[in-house]
Amino acid sequence: MNIDVNVQKIIFSLLRRWKLLIVFALIGALVGYFYTNQYTTLTYSSDVKFLAYATDSNDDLEENNSIEVIRSSNTSKMNYVRSMLPTYITIMQTNEFNSRLVNDINETYNSNNPISIVSGALEIEILNDTSIFQITVTTTDSELSYKIAKQLETTVPKIMKEKNQGLVRASVEDRAVKATSAGNKGYAKKMLLCAVVGFGLAAAYVILRTLLDVRIKSSEELTEKYNIPVLGSIPNFEGKGVATVSTKGAEGYVKEK
Image (cartoon, rainbow, N blue to C red; front, side, top):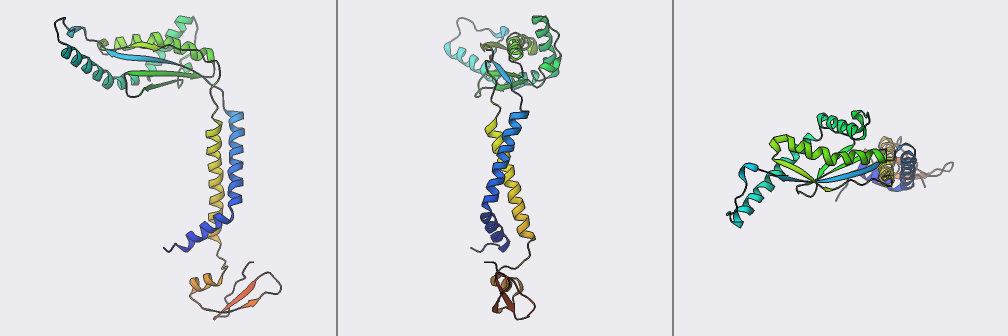
């Protein structure tokens, strides 16, 4: 299989300058380490897990209903909860929800916190395609993260009960625990990212230099580029190399040893 000449040159140049690529990758990794160490803030997380379930007081099952009817009703309710859960999670990501949460925190702890303490601090996810969802609170203060998560245990069920006529509600399945240590700064991920950037910059430099280099370095390149046969080579006694003369007499090159 024939490979384009420029591609061959680029691959050869990259392989020949592998040390440069490695050095730049190591420099990038070191930059990532020092940046992470100096500018990444330690954070603390507390999380709460909730179980969402459906209630329908108007269609309560009677005692004489069969097991099959009960199972069918429970399955329908579970499917309804799963279909509606993303909507409730979206509600919990609104400014209205954040404002309600902060007001509840201030009332509970007799404080005067601004809404900014929860803005961007909450991460909500549904666990493994179930009716259980988790809210993780991450801040730079372990005590604050715990207080917010603890308040969620009360505020979230209240809000879900108030919405959509209370058809979907939530119960606490796993209560908040105060973080005893900070989360990982992510050294490995950031160092790897910076190493890839350093490697890419070095590779771009090598490729650009190779493409801009118009010098002819072999008789094969001379023949291929100009379609001129090489008659012979004249030793270069002053420098290191051999001068090659073509049929035109004006073309030549110096072959590096």
